[in-house]
Image 1: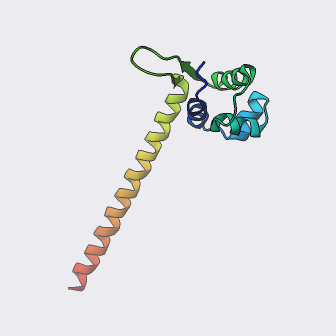
Image 2: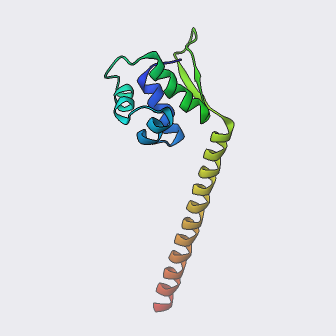
Image 3: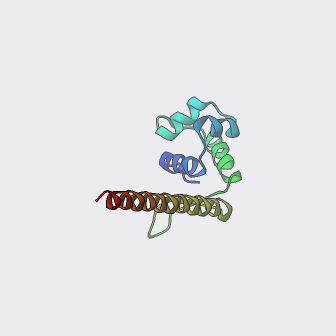
Length: 116
């Protein structure tokens, strides 16, 4: 298990969890989690394991280092599918806003043309 605080923090953020939520799920104090993520102390292996398990239960897969890259993580397809849905919704909203802005500009241009 990668004990790099940056990887643990990244996993939490990717899942959209607050420190309070992850600490509760891992049954540790928020202060312990904050210190763990900040790399402020050398935690017990059991503390790292409880955080790791809480993250894995929510879809994170921790990856060990290889010859060519360091440790990392990935998320389950279910989680990434949710991201794709969210991105598609944002794209649709932007398209609608763009279409609305073009329609408003056209109305303004038409009104200006009528005034001439």
